[in-house]
Length: 402
Image 1 (cartoon, rainbow, N blue to C red):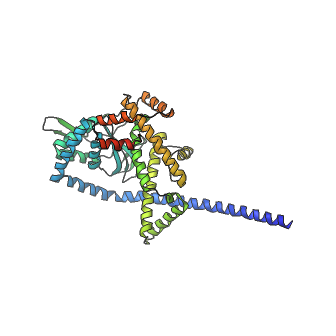
Image 2 (cartoon, rainbow, N blue to C red):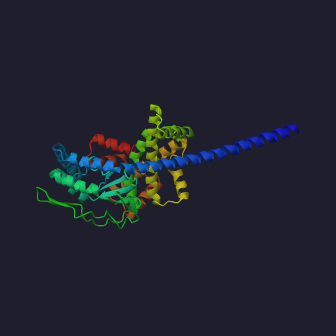
C-alpha cells in the first residue's frame, strides 16, 4: 500500500513538472515572439529614419557620375552591354544595370533571354517587396544612350531613380516616398507615367525618348513569374548557405541573440564574438525570411491564410525548423528548384513561350513525371549566347547539371 502511494505521488509529481515545463515554454515562446515583433518594428523605423540620409547619398552619387572619368567609363560599359544584348549575352547587361541603377533598393536584376529585364527588390526605406520591369526596346534605347551620350544617360537615369510608382510582387502599387500602398491588378496596370520623359537625338540621327507614358503591360502569368524567379532564388540560397550556423536554429542560439540585442539596446558593450554572431544570425534570418516570403507570394499571393502558411512552412525552408530539419529541407528545396529551372530551359530551347498555357502544362507534366534537361544541349545553347567556356561551366554547375 505504501509503495503504491509513493509511486502515485511520484507520477503526479512528474505530470505536474511536465505541465509546469509546458506552461513556461509557452510563456517563453510568447516573449520571444514579442521581442521579434519589437525588433521588426524598430528595424522598420530605422529604415524610415535613414531615408533622408539615403536620398542625400543618392544626390552625391548622381554628382559623382558627372566626373569625366566616370562618363567615359559609362560609355565604354554601355557599348559593351549593348553589343552583348544584340548578340544574346544577357549577363553583361545585368552587370551594367546592377552597377549603375541603385535607386535605394536591395535586389538583383535578371535579364531574360528575350532581352527584357526584371528587378525583384526590397525597398531600403519602406521594407516593401516589389518588381520593376522594362522591355527589350527600352533596354536597348537606354544602352544606346549610355554608349553615345553619357550626359543624357545620366539625366535619364536620374529621372528613373526619382520615380515613385512601383508595383508590388502581390500586384499592388505603392509610393516609395510616402509608403502608401494601393491595391491594383498586375495585369491591368504598368508603372505609372512620370512626365513627358527625356528626348535626345543620337549622333546617328536616332531619336531616343526615356520615361513618359507607358502602355499597360500584358497579363503576366504565374508560369512566367516562376521561371524568372528561380535564378534569384538560387542566388539567395547560396547566401543562406554561406551564413548558416546550426546553432541559429536552437533555443540556446536564439536566447544568445536575444540577450545580445538587449545588451546592445542597454548600451552594454558586446564581446567581438557575440557581435559577430548577432550580425551573422541577423543576415541568415533575413535571407531565409526573404526567400520564404518570395515563395509564399509566388504561389499564394500576399493574402495567404494562417492555415496555408503553416502548410507552406512544412514545404519550404524557414527559421522555425530544427537544424536537422532545415538542412534536409534546404537540400531538397535546392534540388527541386534547380530541376524546375532545367526543365524551363529545355522548354524554352524547344520553342515554347513562357507565360503560355502550353508552356505551363509542359513544365508541370515533365516535373511531375521526373523529367530533366540534357547537359550537352544546354551547354550548346549557352555557347550560342556568346558565353565563355569558363562562364558556361559555372552556369551549368549553378543550375545543377551533371
